[in-house]
Length: 315
Image (cartoon, rainbow, N blue to C red; front, side, top):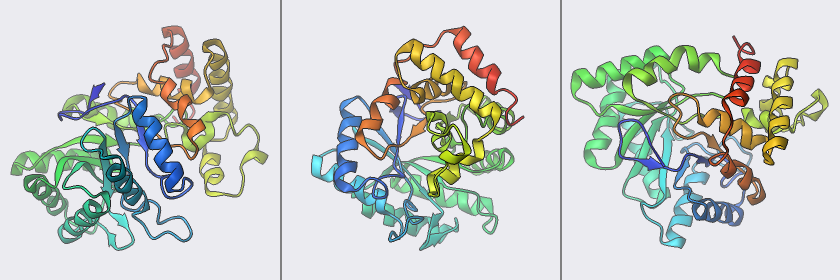
């Protein structure tokens, strides 16, 4: 178990991504995935109020609804911690104080809960003064509706500004960051965020830990990128250097008798500041490879090889 920054949230070193719940995984499949994740020791799911408004036929809130229904049907309380986000739901766009308050209440209703364990600002809102947004999140903490605050998709400068505003006004401080970070997308985090993480003891929950599927070994040629949203997302990482990383992951996976995603997440899990990578599945048979990353032991030589191969990809 690992603690998220300066919080009392102790979590399993893998966070289950909730973006697929109610999207590529229907409710029955989602329930099976959540059951298996919890049975393996998992205790933290990352969602958002906008999941999955991006999918045809969905309007947002589907992931939270599935989570709420699952916890209610299983009689599960705080043994499964939930993070969700505000700012991108079609009915609650942006981070004005009124919007944050209303969106939080809507999320709580869907989650069938009286509190959110970790509430993320999904992305910066340049139209709302940052001190107003910080005050709105602080009010949720003071009311007991939110336990802790996190920031996602904020620039390092804006993260520092939020922290300064919180300190100046006695607001609850963010305890977590959710950055884009993986073996083929490193520079942004390591140069911009890592110093803030070290200085302020922020718990890092990276998203796109498997580079939208590119680091699973599924995509080896340009023809492998199907027309769907997942293929388009993964194609951004496609390069000769990226393929060299995948080849090294495959070799190490064979040596350790695990799957390629296991090694990719295993490397990420041991990076400075990282508490738990976020990874999602659409089918229950995809879950063991993710869970195995929490037990994988890479040698220093193996870790250094992956680090060296990926060091200049997005420099």
